[in-house]
Image (tube, rainbow, N blue to C red; front, side):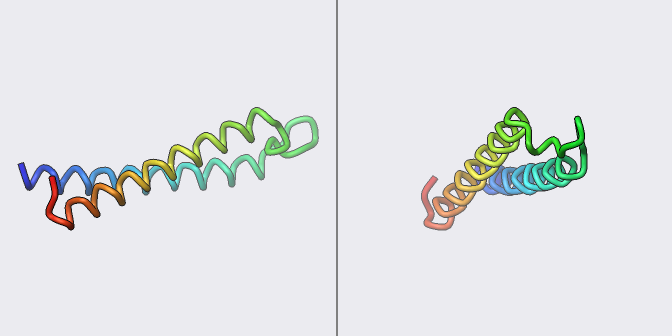
Length: 76
């Protein structure tokens, strides 16, 4: 079980990295994509989606850091 506990944290860290890259690529795409002559980043709906992605990515990062900290301290 100890091995699995550590592996889960590693998988979580990978997922956070993938999520961050997806967020970065989404922002990059939105800045370069135009609709009605303006970048789609001007759309409130797009801004809300990007903000939600950012919040979820940061929350996952914090939870992963907390899990790693707990494991480092020897707790389960």
